[in-house]
Amino acid sequence: MLKSAKEMVKRLGLPHESFDVATARLVLLNIPEPERIVAEMVALVKRRGVVALHEADWGLRVCDPPLAAFDRLLQIFMDYATANGMDFFVGTRLPRMLRAAGLLDVQVNPIVHVFPLGNPMRTFLLQFAENLRDRIIAQGLISEAVFNELVAAWKLHIEDLTTLVLFPLYIQAWGRRP
Image (tube, rainbow, N blue to C red):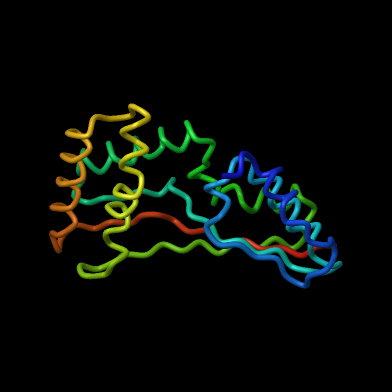
């Protein structure tokens, strides 16, 4: 497993100024020091080349009617992210990171989905919980029994047709190298 963005950038070994476009989707929120990845992407594109990113941002989280289990699960995920060098709010930082890396004409496109009953993305949080279950429990962020209770409450809540969930916010941002 890579220990840092610096190590990842070093392992790429791609020649700088070789590409017209560098793009990534849902990568930066999982990597410590995402600015280093953005800087490397900028270095990879030719003059007037484009760097484009698509990232999730957990800042927008709407569940109506409200559910304490939803809020608690999200807090556990935030605690896990913080403990492991992940930034679940990287999406809203994308435009600033692109500008700081020297890109011009930075554009932003926010995307929010409302997934109806039956859409597999409606259960995204449940899938995410199952994926991280063992790691979250092993790190002592929550007991297995409480974790199971929260997941069961959330599952029941989203099976209700009247429950509205807006989560997560996606940010697409791109810019041009001078």
